[in-house]
Length: 140
Image (cartoon, rainbow, N blue to C red; front, side):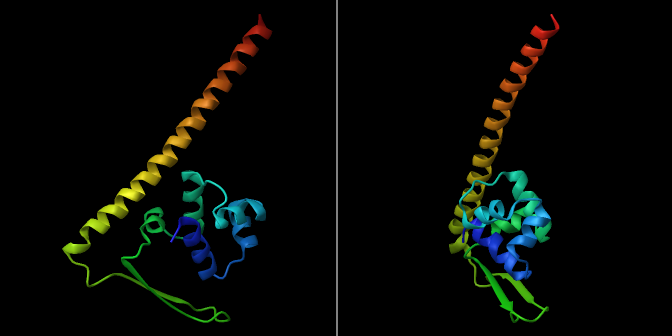
């Protein structure tokens, strides 16, 4: 399951509309909808904001994988939902390579996001230096 699918699932589980979620995040409905459709790259800081609103940990968002078992009980009209989460009890040493693969994938995602943030900040530094140079020229 992709990150954006997990976000949509958690929002739906809380019976929140996209409008409600967008409002809680301070985003436009269209902007938030793009996140849920996977049409936009989400910064790590935005993911942190999303998981805070959803009341889960960032690690949980990345950790929802095939090895985990979810039991979802409830009705569309009920306000009471129950989610039971437990790691697969039959996991053995044979699943260790799968666990390691998932951990590696999570690490790669985090690294990619950090690289994007670094690139953005480097561009911002260049722009700020240009602004400083312009201000210096105006003062002189």
